[in-house]
Amino acid sequence: MYFQNIQKCVILLIVTNYKEGQTFTMNKKPAKQTKAQIDKKIGACIREERTNRGISREDLAKILNLTTSHMGLIERGERGATSLTLVKLSNAFGVPVNRLFDNSTDVNEDESNTLREKLYTMTSDLSDGELTVLLHTAKGLLTARQ
Image 1 (spheres, one colour):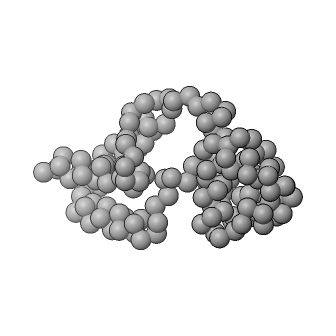
Image 2 (cartoon, one colour):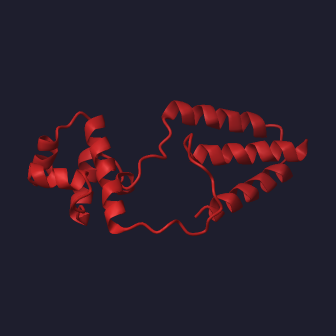
């Protein structure tokens, strides 16, 4: 029973860091990506942030002091965004810069609260020793994924 509870808690901790459909792997190094792949991923994130906020490409280009066609090239990943442009985008959207690299791991507030409640319920009757084991196990798993 003890290890089943620990196992359930570790799985829940992993789930809170991954959105449905993603898999947890123990790879130490992420797969290499080309510049073109990275530019496409960043461009897609920028487009998603822009459309989620109901901002036209033209308006965003004006805010960033870019042409509309240049903004389109960035969103399609045909041209990489400069670090200055990424900072301006981050400020315009009110999000951290890393959000422009990958926003697929976001969990909305309701999902996050539900997961936290489940984790609390599952761990509320564990002893300090059991919680220590759980914490070390979770840290090891989360470190291994990097």
